[in-house]
View (cartoon, rainbow, N blue to C red):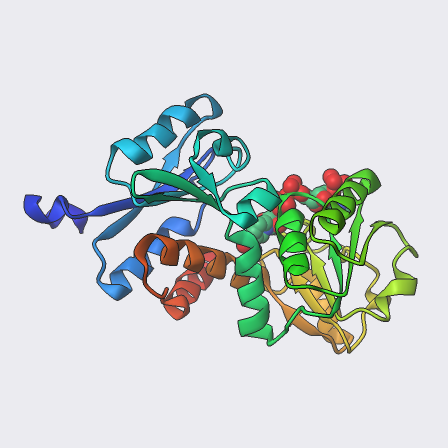
Length: 294
Ligand code: NAP
């Protein structure tokens, strides 16, 4: 217990944490504190309920106190950029920051969501995006991170399908232009709209919350009969680990990838930014999985 540490030892504790509103359901504290303990690091990760109006003061506290950095979640991922000194390439492109690093007195904003997704793809599904044909479903914050990362990895064709077509159009145009993609196309998310392209695809990524607990018994986001055995189907939802979409994909003979890996790897990359040490991904995954199934 931290309260049992001697005063001299307490002075050495390096602080990290999560700024958001609300924060009480986050799995990040248990994931990071388990990782710090595993490597014997004197770091601590705390959840901070920071309302919108208090963000500037909270960020000033990162510099003023001995924080190594923090994570940001809803509703701060965009606004926090106004209070930082520098942004990483990913954070700049995605337009959102989920990790702040205090480095030589400066605050640097990173976005580890896209890279976390990529590491999950490569390490858990042995999938390399370069020259592949991919469909991203959804056009919200997670879709931005995934679409930019896939474009940075030089996918051959990027399709973005969304319920609100204009949002998919904006994202596809933006990613296509900024990263000089030959093919970045928007599609409506409606019955029949995906049937002509899906047979040639290598990867489908669902970034919508469809199938997330407690509403697990729902129709998959796309028609099950479109799925085929040459696909890798990834769902960013991690609770449940096997969503209705992943069950349908498995039935069709496709490879599947749960959002649990992205959750763990985006945290692992933040851990590595703060500590400079390789994250103990195995224990992080175990503790998160246990917390989900509790
Ligand atoms: P967001 O910004 O609110 O975007 C949600 C997207 O889903 C929008 O494109 C929205 O379409 C679409 N959508 C929502 N409900 C829908 C429905 N019933 N039918 C069709 N489309 C629907 O949310 P986000 O931050 O991108 O997060 C999305 C999901 O990803 C959440 O479940 C979140 O938990 C998960 N996520 C997981 C990780 C991870 O580490 N595994 C990381 C980030 C996010 P419209 O534009 O038409 O509203």
